Image (cartoon, rainbow, N blue to C red; front, side):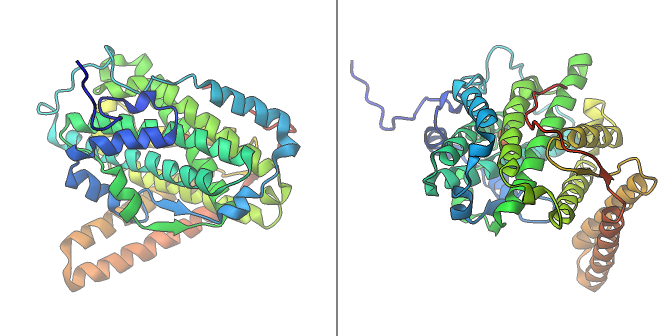
Length: 380
Ligand SMILES: [Fe+2]
Ligand SMILES: [Fe+2]
C-alpha cells in the first residue's frame, strides 16, 4: 500500500531535524494545534519578556575568524558531530504529568515559565537563522546554521511539553508578527553571549539540584536540562570567539556597555524569577539563593572574555535587587488597578526601578586579566 503523506514533515519530530529549516517545517505542520493564549503571551513585549532581535547582518558577515581558527574549528567540529541529535523528544523517561491535579498557582507559573522559555529559544533561532540566510561568509553561516538548528529543537521540545497542557506557541505566527528590536552587532554579541551563558548556568543549577533531590522534580522536562545546557554552553563559546576576533569589543569605552548588559541581564533574571514564587517553592529552590548561584557561575564563565565582572557581594547589590523587585510589583499592581491612580503609581514604580538600576550599575566592577585561551568546557 502506498500511503503518501500530504506533508513530508507529518509525523516527524523536531529532535531529529538536522537543519533549522526542517525543524521549523515540522513545527509549522503541527501548528494546526496552536493555541491563542500561549501565542499571545509569547507576543508580549515588555522590559521583562523575551524579545526578537535583528541586526546589521553585513557587518556580522564580515568577521574574519582566522585569528581564532584553531579554537573555532574545534568548536564547529564538535557542533557538526551533533551529540544531541534525537535527544529532545519524549521517551520512556518522560513521566506522566498530572496537569489537572497540579496546584493552580504552580500550573500558572510553570506554564508562564515554559512559554517564556520557548519564546527565548525561538528568539535565538530566528536571529541565527536570519544570519545564516543573509550571510556569505562560510564560517559565519555555518556557525549560525548549527546554532539555529539547536534552538529550533529546544523550542520544539518545550512546545511538546506545552501541548500536554493543551497549549502551543505558534512559532510561524511569531516570526511574522512579533516586533523585532534592532541591536548593533556588538550589542548582539554582549546580549547573546550573556543569555547563552546565563541560560547554561540556570539549566545546570536546576539540573544538579534536582539530581540531588529527585522527589522535587515535578515535571520530566528537567531531566533533559543537562544536554540542553551543553548546547547553550557551545553557543556561548561561539560568541566568545567572535568577540575575541576584535579586542576593541572587550576594552575601552565598551566596558561600560559590557557592564550595562551584565547588570541588565542579571537584574532582569532576578525580577522575572521572583514573579514565580510557587514554581520555585515546588522545586525547593530559594529564588535568592538561585539568583546568587547563577550569577556566580555566569560571572566565573564570563571571565573568559570580559575583563570585568559585577561585584555581587557588594553590600548594595542584594538589597537593591530586592527594591527593584518591589518596584516591579508596584508597577504590575498599578497596571491592574488602572485609572489615574494606577497611572500615577506606575510612574512612581518606574522611577523607583530606574533608580535601582542606576544604583546597581554604579557599584564598582571587579577587574581581572582575561586568559590567553578563551575556550572552556562545561564544568558545573
Ligand atoms: Fe537553546
Ligand atoms: Fe542557545
